[in-house]
Length: 631
Image 1 (cartoon, rainbow, N blue to C red):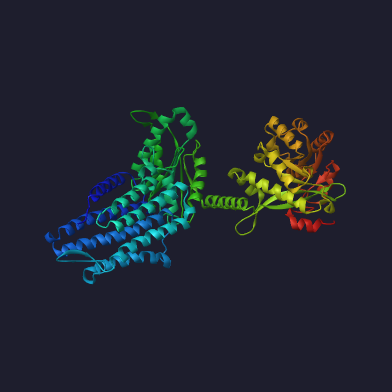
Image 2: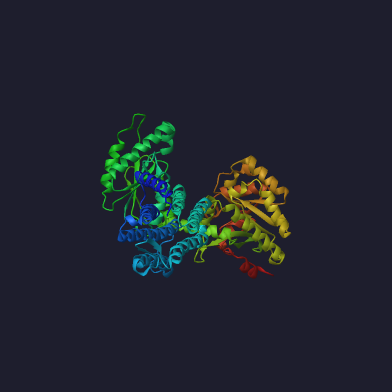
């Protein structure tokens, strides 16, 4: 006799999940679709399990054909459910099904075999059969029923561990691992207690785990569950890369942060909620997302007249957004985009985010078009970011050296160490491109430290005197300069390589001179460790001679723009400035020297050192050593 007392409450809980899930707005992505299929398949499996078990217990009251059909439907639902329980793991890991992939085709094969054998079992008696004495297990029941089920959970464990790095958070991996463990426990329980129909309860537990971790509709809703949120937008874009056959329309509240400060959080949120509801009514067949900070994105039908919609929405913004609680007056800007290429979700969101910044300013009321050029620019930036991240993580920052020569003798006296990074094709990325991105991305400290350490290694491994090099300049970005433990970290590195810190001159720009007290304190701390400082790119910032008097620089480097301006149109300003520097005991280096006339002009006004393409472009360390060794 089969005991199915656990099945009734299992069925009731499944019904509650179904009702709640379908009562909320749902995003049409594969994960949600597969989850719905799992619930429906599990519901059918439980129903047929209950009815078939009841019929088997009372086989004398049930026609043999009906008894056979009920068991057939149970086994088919069971096998298909096993397949979809496995497929859910694939969609969570964003593993696309490829019909050309033989392994992926083979994964479906056991389910097909199980269903086919189920259909022929009443005649072949392979999985089950029925007769006047009721239901009986077939000759290969255990092999097929449990073999197929354990096949899918074992493959699921393998896939989880192979692709575990695809999970954004460790919690997601642990939830999917627990999901599969619970399914395995359910199979083991049925194997040990075949007459107690408790396995479906374990399946329900697994469904609840993924529901709480991934499928709760509230995770994808914003503004009091009015519209989808930014998480939903990202997942939808990621799943539809290259297949986004919809019009992309954006609405942004003008001066969002200032308006929020005026109205307050509660009133503003109510206003945003009203806007979200209005947009859902305006685009009944579209998907409306709230992308934070007063920005909405609508994915509408491709044939939608966006200009007409913009006029309607603008007219609505001329009236207040009013409810029983609040009344707010807002204005809005608009953007649109045609996304035909296979841009990633990050590229799309970063690009429209930039355009939203422009549209979010008062005075911008026409629809701003996000162009292919905008997407390409962001895609290029993100490619550079990946190159920077890869180089930093793999210690792949290259150091190039550019010679610095004596202005009067033309002989090599020093060099500047410059960081270089290559893209995915091995080409050098201009420093003016990757340095700002490294600063914004938080990689500049590690990047700068790698350059410093590799410069120390170069000094350790080569005889600088034989090349005529007395010192090597290393750049410090303003972000690096703010590190309070900079002196200790750099001191540890120079001690590691056993070199004198006074061989390395640290270059800082005028951007680092914002706070006089911190500037002097940091230079003092570094000076106590033996380091000396050079002011780089003088003429591009806001420092003045009075401020420079307070700083113990050993050298001031004139920015190339200052040098070129003087060589193009000489005046008394730069020579007088250099005389003041000389009076303060600063040595002077002129950057950007490209011909002999420029070199002579800078030498004539008192520059001590020259640097530029006239002497050499920055070159790799090996090439620098080969060129200047025993010079």
